Image (tube, rainbow over all chains, first blue to last red; front, side, top):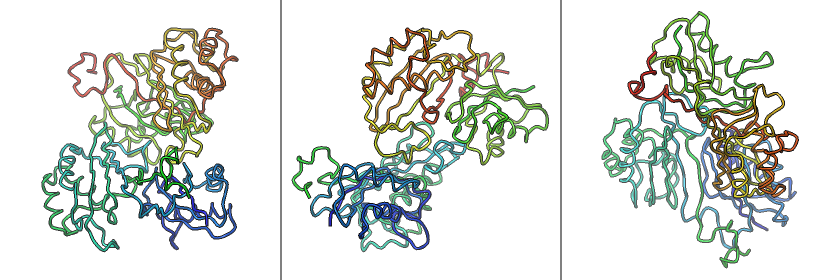
Length: 262
Length: 262
């Protein structure tokens, strides 16, 4: 069955998360239903990052399996037509490389967490940020974040429902940058534990408020005990920015990589 | 009567524009109604830029006149409380400087126009951009824009309903920058004619598409004839970023300027 790699953007506010749920609308459901308009047969999809309810994506990667081939140059427009009026759009489409999985072939996932740090409520960024009215010291947060970089047991920042066998993960980047009222935290890793980014942000915010010393982050990490970390930051501030692969399915010149050919 | 300078952010989608209208809700109305909760007397406001229906602001400046003084440090929170659930927020508050008018004291108004230039419809930027699916040459647009910089008769880019006596204006900046799929056009001038920014953008888009040579912008400007310019760009892409004053009412140290004291 022909499989296509899709680059997908969505506003997570309206959904119960990526994955199909009996309890409500998921991004997976609206995407597969849009694809079912194109091909009457069975449609299936797998995804790079199974984002939670309320989490956004500007660069989610999906493998979409159709019952029969569809003209590649028309696929994005056709899917976008049937996705309306849902806040989901297919940005790019490519043939899925051979033996490629959006999830298991991913070398690096990039998430961005946005905090709007001002007294006034968000307006133009509403639904895309965590609104923290009390002043945060972004430099202290950046300093504390450095303790989390590297290969560690992240049990302290793992949600109770996490199904991963091991809590060992390698965090390649955790940058904290302030630009005016906006604090952006960029996290990069091959994979993350359930709620890991939001739990790290929840603790860094306590450092930013001055309620925790920056060095406390290292102590919490070392204790490997979820009860010692801060609360989970809200979903609305989180966005999956992109996923890196050894062979990027969306590279403009498919010739540059042998495995890009299906 | 005590007058306060307000820095205001709003999402213009929900409103008929800044100015009170009998036909529907305006930002002026919801702001004055929020202020009326604080002071039972008469409330009045004047504004730096009377934005149109659908136009946003991240740095609008308003002079709000109350019937009686209100504690300065509580004014923004109190207004924001009563502004809910409207997408309008007061970011900063200061005593209005003596003889200061948000409109007539403005030295420079900064507007940004955003074009999302990709085939897929906008999702995370929905309602904040003009979606142009066909590829635009931002370099050609930037080159063409240079012809508009300076002091000119802008009759070609002035809407029919414009009430200004003269179409002479000095355009200090008209930058076109592409960042990925987003093209941002920044326009700076002491004042603009009615629809001037949106009309300039509408013509620059024709240059970007290759339907107009860049040099045609100079010819259209020189002809001083609205019928020769392109169509008006949609309101949703436009945002009033800020207004500069000789004495910034929101400067952190009011001591630095004599006129800041009321």
